[in-house]
Image (cartoon, rainbow over all chains, first blue to last red; front, side):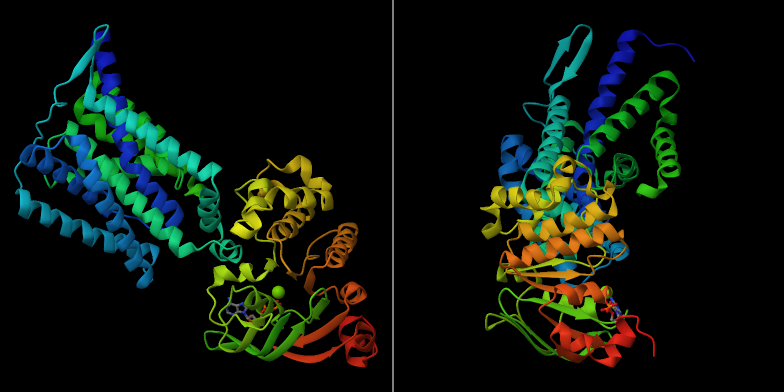
Length: 285
Length: 236
Ligand SMILES: Nc1ncnc2c1ncn2[C@@H]1O[C@H](COP(=O)(O)OP(=O)(O)O)[C@@H](O)[C@H]1O
Ligand SMILES: [Mg+2]
């Protein structure tokens, strides 16, 4: 092992934080629907990529500003999430079956993306693409910084909503004991629709961040699943801050491993962490 | 106020309640006693909207509740203290109480209700921030009753509130239940602690194997040989 320069190490640390914040952002919606609706929503990843491609399309072809695309994408995705939950509750889909059904949705969305945008790599050109600033000897890319800030903002506001509002208390109560929450007037079905809508909208936001910083291809959908699941499980199901914190820990650990040992070792990091957490906190999952 | 007519509740193929009729007038304290598995919890859960009923009629002030969605029962003035308490254990005591006043009608009176329940249960004052699951059994039962009171019910349903509690705490619970009733709230109390329940009840029903087998004033019931033998520990 040859020790890299401080600058390289610092830059790795920074990129670890940035990619970790995207893990956290992707994990937020996943964690909420898993912890509160008992659904393992694989389609979350495909939805995020669909969002990324839509952002790409609206920006590169139609010429919109990437941030403005959210005004179109968020309401559509929210509606999609609501519709999905409506169908899930209409057909009383069990937690295990939710995994299968959402895997099916993933494959459908992947095919749709492949049909519309082909399997070629796509990279969004936007005014933000190459924006960066320098702190000391380190470069801070604006799109990645934006991802970090958005992830923090969404995680904290979700936390505050769950913690300090009647709606949030109702959500937590019905996750614990839906029947008794209902006896005190909580309309579980309505809350589930709302939560699923928000979760899908979060996937849309993650999609924007993906499009801002990454090259897109349909098969990339699957590349994120393992590590984001690790962040969600380490962070605690239903916990809105957990995925972000765990995501950043994983991202940094991966980046340091890449810099110090070899890039090939990076994927081992998240899964070693996940296995350790599963072994030590099996009761909580 | 509450009318239950020829109620039938099934769990799948098994019928838990047959032809159960009870009524509770405003301000009454009515008790349902019966052995384990008689269907007491099934009855109370049905009245709270937790169980769907398969036949018969539930009505509050003449208004039919049969087709009311479960989450709207509390708007009719019905609140439940369920068997086994069923607190939201990961949430704080205060959050449990706040959830009790989730509906808009109760929410506007939240602060006053909170002061009132803390007057009834001063022991909870210092535990408001604690996760409900960390409290002792007696205090958890207080939270369960307080949560129901936060909903400002006209009818309070209590399912075995004395279960698993130390005798001194049981006495305190019964005192509080009587006090709540005296403040004007009708109470439907389900108990296996028959002697104590009959002592505070104005009227009582005996439920066995899913059927009401007897009804009357506590004095009437206590004079029936069957009741004395089965519930009050009198031999042969
Ligand atoms: N969720 C359930 N599913 C199936 N059977 C049930 C369920 N709950 C209660 N029962 C059955 O219904 C009957 C009445 O139970 P319950 O209402 O709990 O009685 P009690 O509260 O008087 O002890 C019992 O025979 C019980 O086994
Ligand atoms: Mg019972």
